[in-house]
Structures are given as structure tokens and as C-alpha cells.
Image (tube, rainbow, N blue to C red):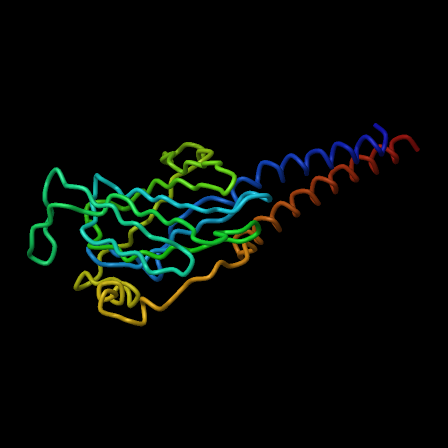
Length: 245
């Protein structure tokens, strides 16, 4: 095998690995600020990266779980975004602080009033939620992302244990073990009182560059695989040359 052919095979393998890895970089996800303890409150961030080079994200719709309804869900005010909270009647009332709750937030919609999330950036959409259920280990939030060119991406596929990650996975919030008093972390305590805080209303979360640490780590891993593939190709070539000699 000629050196040029070996190099081409190595380059092709590296390109294939990189192409397969790229989609995992840009999922809509949800993470707590601190912890999300069962039975407590938490502030969670829906992280929305822009996957397009020629369009901005101008709308985000997040549907809340119906199998484990949350009696309280309050989005944080954000400059440049109009926020609409939709509530629905519950089939079965739930109890919160000794009171029966007959309706809960079913969807929150953020609509850009300006440029939105531009290419090369991501945005965090914070929401105070509670009381978190104690009979499940995770909550699934289905999200719909709309771009300025009218393209719609539906992040609604529920990941299944033991199976490959779907192409458009829904954001999943992992819940930690219940803490004493069911109040969660310090961020969760602030979440429970957020409607009494004027400072929270003034706080905004500007879009941030999309070169986060997890993306950097994945890119470095892909580079390592490519370099390894090229090294194997070079070793094969060197062995063949010794054999021919």
C-alpha cells in the first residue's frame, strides 16, 4: 500500500470520527444551579446553543412534565426576551405547603424581542422550580427551538437506558437524594423566595460564547483519536518498508 493511500485512509477515519462527534456538542439541556434535591426547590438553567451559522435562535418553548407536575415554576426576567407562562388544570390536585394545588405550569415560552441567540453563542434560561418529586430520579422537559429563518428543531425524544442517544434528545434533569428539611441547596432556597427579591428581577443573563469546557474536552478527544489513527497508518507504512527492504 502506498504512503499516499495510507494517509488518505487515516484522514478519512479521522474525518468520520469528527463528523459523528459534532452533533453531540449542541443539544438543548437542563442543569441545576447547585443541586436539585428530591422534595426541595431548585433553580435550573435551560442551556440553548445556536447550531446554525446563518440564523439566530428566536424562540424557546419548554413543556413541563405531566407525570410529575410542578406546583411552582417561575422564570427569571431576561432582557431582550418576552416570557409567557402557561398553566393547565391537573387531573389530580397536588399538595404544596399544606395547600391543595389544582393547576400547574405546563409550558414556558421565551420569544426574542431583539436578535436572540446569535450564531456562535448560547443562552441560559433560568427557572425556579419546586417542589421537586420524591418518587422519581429524573424529570424530562421537552423543548422546541425556533430559528430566525423559521426552522424548528424539536428536542422531544426521550432517551432510553441501554440504547443510543436519540438524534434530538429531550432535556433531562437528574434529581439528587432528598436533603434534610427538603430545601435543597442555597440556590434552591433563593429560588423559593425569588418572587420577594427585587434583585432577582433586575438580574439578566447575557448570551455567552459557545466554547464551553465540555465542548473543548470532546474536541480534544476527537483530535486524539485522529492523531492515533494517523500514527497507526504511519506504523503500517514503516513496517511495510522494512519488509520490502
